[in-house]
Length: 80
Image 1: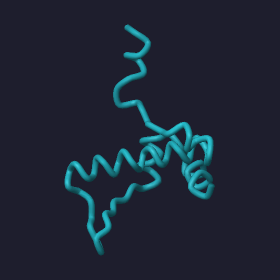
Image 2 (image 1 turned 135 degrees about the vertical axis):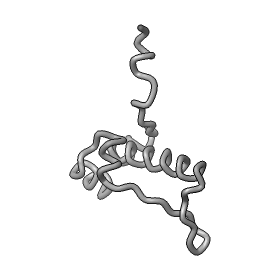
Image 3 (image 1 turned 45 degrees about the horizontal axis):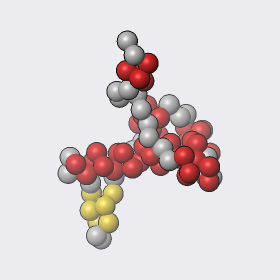
Image 4 (image 1 turned 90 degrees about the vertical axis):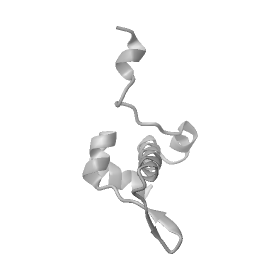
């Protein structure tokens, strides 16, 4: 099996390296996951629209499952 085959699939979280340099890697990971979730919710017509703005939510538990960042790591990254 090729190395990239081992890494590919559902195990990826995309994040922007420039943003990671500005805020933190964990902050960029959370932002990347939120962007991915927004796209996913939108494609499934699951966004809530209120006052012309689109909303969705993810619990800290879901973020932990998707990013492997603990609740404390999430709080620290969001604070930054």
